[in-house]
Every structure is written in C-alpha cells, then in structure tokens.
Image (tube, rainbow, N blue to C red; front, side):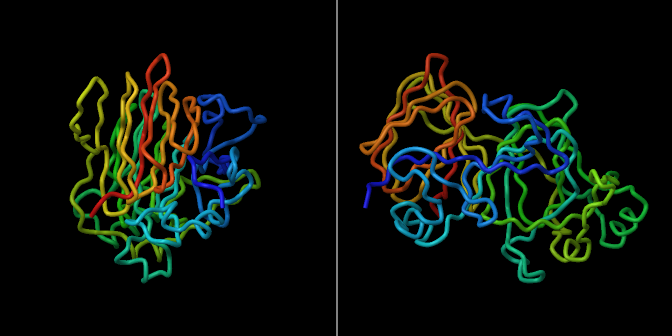
Length: 327
C-alpha cells in the first residue's frame, strides 16, 4: 500500500440559486462560465465526494482512503472510520436563506445530522453582513408570526463583516450569510439544513424552495447569549511568522498562520490537518511528498505524515489550518 502523503482533491461545485462566479475568478480556476455558489474542497459526503487529483492516489475517493487507512489518515483524536469535517468555499451573490442546523444534543428530535460550523471572511462587499442568532426575547410564537408577516429580518442579529472576520455558528443558532460575502467554511460532516425563510425568492421556473419550519423550530436554541464575531487569540511564536487561533470547539479548530519565512511543524498523529492558502503561495513538504500551493488551493495532510516543512512564496503566505483539537 502506498504511503500517505499530502492529498489534493478536485473541488466539487454546487450551483445554488444565490451563488455567483467569484470562486473561479478569485482563485484562478479554469472553469466554464456558470454559477459556482459553493466549492466543496474536502468532503466525504456521498452526494459530493472528494476525489484525489494528483499523486499516487489519483482517482481514489476520500471515503476509500479513510476505509483503507483509518487512523493513519484521520488521527488518534478522531477515530478510525469517518472523516469528521466538511470544508467549503461559499460565494454569496445574494443573501442565503434564513436557516438552522441541529446540534449534537437535539439532532435526535428531527432525525438529522448535527452541524456546527464557522465562517472565515475571505472578502466582502463594503456593506456586507451576516445574520447570526435571534434578538433577545424572541419566542417560537413571535418567530412564527414574523414568518407569516415577512418580518423575519427584524428578529435577526445583523453583524457587519469585513475580510479576516470570523463567525462561530453552533448548531441551533438561526443564521444567514449576507450578499457580497466570500467565505471559507469549516463544519461538521453534515448536510442537514432546515430552511425557515427564503426572502420570497423563486427559481428559474418560478417555484419557491421548500421550507422546513416545524423541524427548524424543534432544534433552535432559544436561550443562547447574543452572538458576536469571533475574537482571534494570538499564539506564541519564536520568529517572524505569526499565528492566531480563530475558532476552537470540540469538533474543529481553525488557525491562521501568516508566514514570511520557512518553518517546520512537528508531526501530529492526533489529527489530520487541512490547509487552505488564503493569500500568497507556499510549498508544503513531508518525507513522502511535496505540494505546490497557489492562493485558493486546499490540501489534506494525513495524521501519519512526518513533520511538515512550509516555505512561503515570494509574497509570503497566509494559511488557514483546520483540524480536530485535543480535548
């Protein structure tokens, strides 16, 4: 069996009606004209499975590699048989629906999969915002009335956003991504979404999208504190490179590394690492392989890989690193 080396995948694109074409334009991807609302960068979902694009495992699916390698790919903190995350790029040309996902405590109420997520703002229009959470005191009856009266926006917490902002969205929190946002999303491996409100939007055939009001009401967290943007935490650094922990929860950790000089990271058998180049470019090297990464490229580093040497390009590199944290 071939040794595991850093893995690159073909993105899987989704053409939801609110999406635009910024993903291919921003990241220099050779794609035909069209709507690219989301790019699923690392996915073990059957409906949008990642397939290796380069190297000795070309053509194999992520699910196949997980089955073959288990903990060697996933890490000892993760478990042997399921890739736990889904990594996406999202281009919101229009505002997404108002929606909610279940969490680990209430998913059994509706038979869905729990989904906690975070958004990192790669770019945003000057007036861009996200909606995250309900205003204090909103009750199920008040939300039902607002859904009937088309006044839901008045009940949502609106957060203006700019590049480098981040938002944590635990399962149970009502939310919507506003128009003009280009985001990196890290989430639990789930595709359960309950749509509450879709702004009166219809598709090309004049049809409204399905709403899921009753299951949504059963999984909303009605007592959470007012949401805020995430506050990055600076991590210790021994040189000119800098690192911030953006979000940390039991399901994932997201860090941002700003690299000016080469650096070596120790192996981490506890978890795989997903790297996304937000700015600049970088070369990633392990004992089993080397990967050239331009801006907008995503790489999965298996847990069994040796120490990781990173060399930024001439303009430096900003890397988003996603993994499963220690307890």
